[in-house]
Image (tube, rainbow, N blue to C red; front, side, top):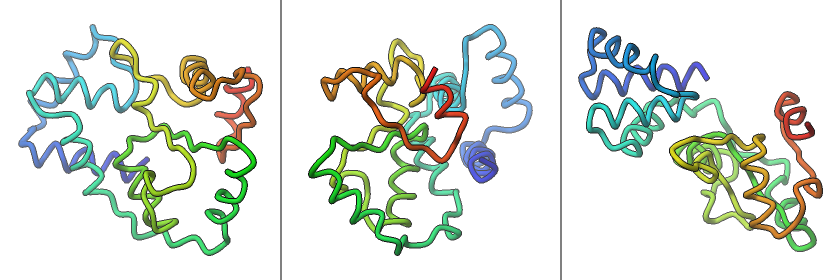
Length: 168
């Protein structure tokens, strides 16, 4: 999270957003339903006439991914094997640009090259709102996509709080 915050500040500098201008943007959000980092970036970009995806792409370019190393445990091979028997997917609360960088560093491939589907934060965006992977909206859309009941999913996540939300 810290890396993304530093990247956000770097990109604000790249676009020439000075502290005073940035403070004004924060003031503008108080009367808006701006929830979450992606929503704030989108709001900020629209307000300044900057392309949201361009802003996010530049953020990802500023993130240091050098701490990630290629996975040698065979996870990708196991996912490939399991995908022949089960409907598998990866759901992320991150944008596809960030997700692709992480996948490339960990598995040597981007999302489109994986043997399973990948859904990012943009997947369940509706009516200008972002719905995270653990939200009922995201889960319902995913269930419809796979033509199964939401209760039939087996969720695996490294964050216990997300698992708690999905189970409720």
